[in-house]
Length: 254
Image (cartoon, rainbow, N blue to C red; front, side):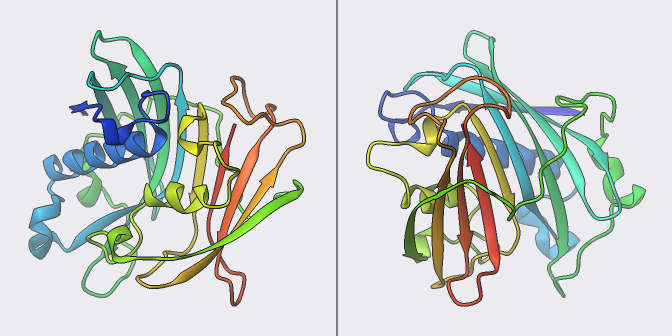
């Protein structure tokens, strides 16, 4: 089953050139995934009945062309394969003329809100999603293991989480990690404008926590978005606990 939703590119959703930014795209992808969960019986407003909450573990976003401010765009999604405790989901992004302007893939896990345990992806839990296991955006892609960058360190910063970053699961909302990562980047460099984005979430960030941000950069990387695959010069931002160094998230873009 495929589900789609149309969105307006508001001025708050754009980069400096008034093109749709990556944070807004992650927001839209999160929303259409939640709409699909509602159709499958796991709606956000019925949590007191099914006691399940989905959280994203990985994003891959690839942008070909950015819809402009005050136009509309549509995000389409479908469930893909699932393993014992994780489920994959793919996305396509269209402009208001129906042209494909981006695509993505993701990995999700579901938690039992009563005790915090991870829910198993049993047929009874997943059947409502009507997964399209043969409809795959990136057949050979595997998310890289985070925390192993060998790139040179460029800059560091610290951020204390404020309440506006917290979502209904009482942790930092997943697209907000791009805002946190932005704090370590050079002036004028926008993570939201890069055409390729990988995000891996490891440990949630809770209210009022302070996190350390470290920016690493391939010497060959450009300050503006580049095309191409993983061989392109990369930028990496790692978000950690400043006390014990444990990993919250790693964001790679190019």
